Length: 454
Image 1 (tube, rainbow, N blue to C red):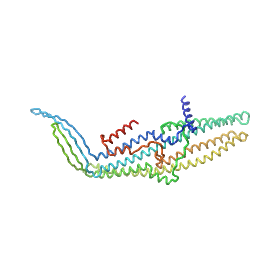
Image 2: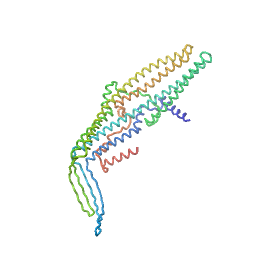
Image 3: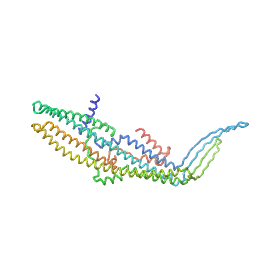
Image 4: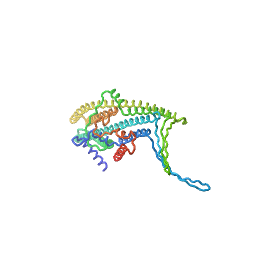
């Protein structure tokens, strides 16, 4: 029962694949669904918002810090006469950094670079999500076509098997011919079952990658891409999000070195307090303080060496990322060229194999060819058609792989009909470190409440 239900589901999807006149998904619709339903994108958008808050916290460090405290005490003095006294004190204190040789501002700038790098990481994740959807789409289409091919193969070999039986009964062929046809039929049925399993697995992957089941998938043309490998590599080096993210990491590391140097210098701060006691006596104080490190057991120099090492690592990471992206472009370009050549060769192979198969079958009917010759010719035609299906799928996937390697596999570049996520919207609400009582703080509460309900 379970197997029958599974194959019934496969058959329904196959029917949709084979019937373009029915309601069918286009690749753009599948990519839009993947963009809208991706939990991975939502996860990384949340990480970006967390990075945005780093800017807010860095800005907050430059603003006044105000605290309050209330204390109450009872004191016992045990002498010849025991006495007690009560005291209470309410205090508000404030502190503001006036000058720190740019430590705070450098911290803000470094955190901004982290935000910019995280935005590029989100773009890279978007490319991964869309590329996975392309692969899932093409795998369902090719698996459906392979299954149709296997079904046709079973029908043809069944006819050959029956013809061999008929010819055996009248003495035109031997039992060996019948056995050969029967063996090929069994093998064809086994390959059909495997194709059904491949289609079922492809449907499951489509569900995960796109967020819903396929509703029939229309044919897809390869994506338009650069025809020059060097131009594609040069474009990728300038625009790929992984490279841009690495560049922002280097800039942030260099800013942290400047910040570490500035942290060894004195800082000037304004501080004060206002307090009142249980007798309503009020006191206040306002002052300026200046100070800086003298000796911290080598921690200062160690921290400086640490940020230098991080800077060097970031530079090496940028170099390695650049090499990896150039390699990805080269690999995708090569695979695209191979798929194109394979598709063209498969077209020619099918034409020749079709003629050969029809000729061998006619010759077998006249007695000049054996059943094995017919089966071999049919297998050649089947292989040619399978090669074409694989080459067409590979060409589409390779074209989108090249777009991804160039940094262009995004909803914006593909003009997908989706509401694109604006990474600056949340940043603009938090970049000035708004307080809870400000209009921006209220707007943030509404935004976060809305996100929590999704």
